[in-house]
Image: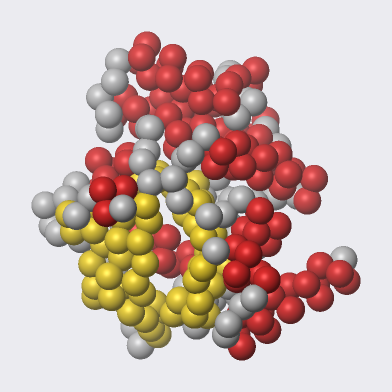
Length: 251
């Protein structure tokens, strides 16, 4: 259904000097999609997310959000980013603010909400991710998993239409990965539209509606999780997944 199309990326390329990191990328995101982007380090996954969030400027191509090209100069990045939220690998919390204030600031500055309304909204999402008891804590007092859950609550408090996750568990100790993935799974179950760059193959397989395998700056293969994991068509995809299985069996 075209009506449910939120974002489409057309012929997107990104170069850093002579190094072409993304080459002619096309894909789209519809309401309720949970798309996992998998691939080896250096395949362009994070750069793609950073282009979608306007943290990098694509070299060519277009990114349409509800049909409007967000690379157009008149599009204001902060307003757009409120609708397309991002959760980073390294949390990116404001270290000088407590948990509640971290989740309130964006709402008051970008969405122009009153402090009271913003705080009520923040509490709703902090409860959702299990971080309501920690509202007065500063980031340095939290574990990595707790920081990431606060970062997710902060992004949700902006009530985005899409949430981008850039390897949200890769900076975490193994025992904390589960708590963040379970929050993400709950969001997916609630129908949140999500685009997730991840090395967590079980999440990609069990939670995604679609899996995109990137290799060397291009989308090599995409499809339903059962197709990508159960019957990959391309040699590169088969090799990548075989390597992953071997690593996991070795651990």
